[in-house]
Amino acid sequence: MKIRPSLLVVQNNSFLVMQYTYEGGVRWNLPGGNLEFGEAVVPALQREWQEELGVVVEVGELLVVGETDRNGQRSLHMVFQGTITQGTPTIQPEETSADAVAWLPCEDVAKIPLYPAIQLWLADYWEGRNPPTYAGELPQVWL
Image (cartoon, rainbow, N blue to C red; front, side):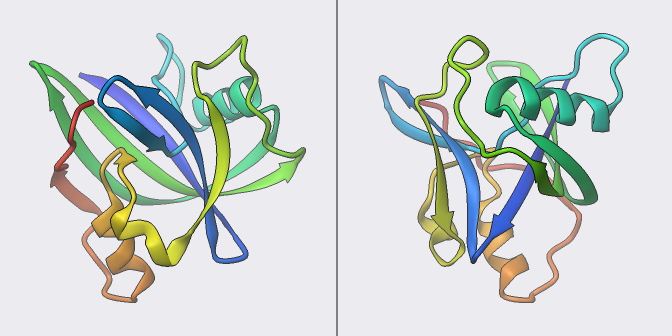
């Protein structure tokens, strides 16, 4: 099972995502990535954000954990709160295949195709409905 931590950064009622274009359409990813062998979660997140977006981040509390299955390849997604402490997020094309970085309105989250697919969880969270930390199997649509 792959372990993929990601970071949710919110500023001015918008959250940061990376845009990817596939044959089946556009997907918005919460920035993060897979752990390298022997790597701990927080350093992995800090490394991924530095490499792919050129920023330094502080990793906060764990928000949600969920699982996906793509043709038998299981992944465990861990989404943490975070803040950017240094720099402005800019795609580093030598480190990622993402097309762009964007700030999307929090109020629109339920309509946004996210990876991992926690958009409904986030809508509940931001509405104060206190969803469980373990979200179980995520309803990921693969492009």
